[in-house]
Image 1 (cartoon, rainbow, N blue to C red):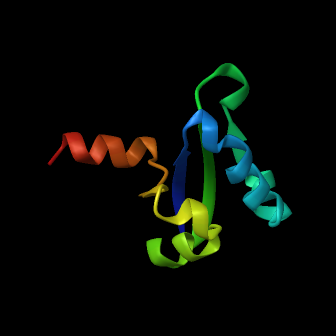
Image 2: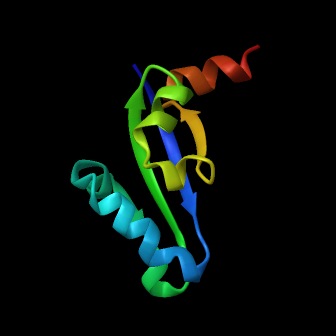
Length: 86
């Protein structure tokens, strides 16, 4: 299973509708962290799935198209060292 970084942006006017939609999925809502109270209407989450499409399907319909989903991985010091040796 891969890990994905999800970025969800919305305009201030859409803030409550996006939250209302996510509130219907409490487990998913808990995975997000938000900057809306600071005026930056964005949220971020780390989700695990088999594919980007699977992550997109996890999101409520109103967030799916707006979400930026990126597969991410951790890097070890030995991997960094081996890249320098290439």
